[in-house]
Length: 347
Ligand code: AMP
Ligand code: MG
Image 1 (tube, rainbow, N blue to C red):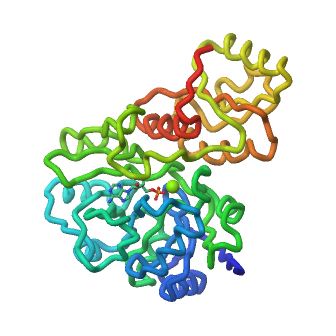
Image 2: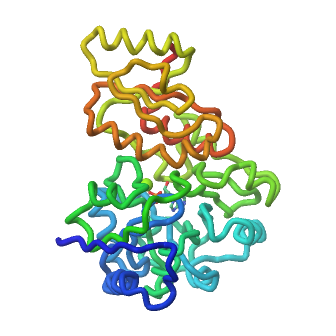
């Protein structure tokens, strides 16, 4: 398959007949797959109502069929068509965070969406992205758009169009390049099907922000406790992993450097994922900076690009520094722990 590439300048007015977006929307209407930027990561979109279209997402990504997809909408009117939206909590959350990096799980309306979207569950995950290209594309397609991250299953999510092309060129119908995404980690997934909202996946909207808007929220224990099954099917899979094995490293800079040298003595090329504040302290074979430790949102924004960039240098082993589990640091650590297969080393 020849993958079309359109470049869009997000600073221009996209609402007036922008031909790139019209062409991409037409492909969605023809039940083809199109990758597009959102404020979190690039998504791989398809018509959420059509079985064949949704099947193409799973096929292109190599995604397990029991991992349901997030449905993206551009207008609040689209919500009532696909979900039972009478939860007061959900309404509060939507008012505060939509458009934005918050996905809300609600009871699903029957017979509207492809059953592949929900992987047979009776709930559906819905989000309104805060990105002009995503919103305009969904509006013009005129259908709800199922869109997981536009990477091969298991790989770090794409934050640039070139990441999408690296993973999916020839496997999807098109890519809209709207430049790098902003938030850098995926949306927070919150279930609003019970009495209290439950975070199923930490992400761009923090627990603190959710509680300020809507009162107490719970965190699914399955996210942090490896022994418990997560409520969200996707959380059980390995994800975000670069090619080399990776472990999270805790300890003083001196001890971490000693460990790096020990691995090097054993003949390994060692990589370290670090921050601007600490990069100068390491003598490793590959040093990658994901952001600034004193501004965790920069770490979230740079995380996947730096994880991917290790692959070019082919280290034998990667150490990743750990981050405080507060604010967006919760999402960063969740992704790093998955990339590490939960391996944490104390130096
Ligand atoms: P991705 O689109 O690849 O960022 O992943 C979407 C995440 O949302 C995965 O962890 C899914 O398992 C989760 N998800 C999607 N639909 C549902 C649902 N109905 N209930 C619980 N989790 C869901
Ligand atoms: Mg994903």
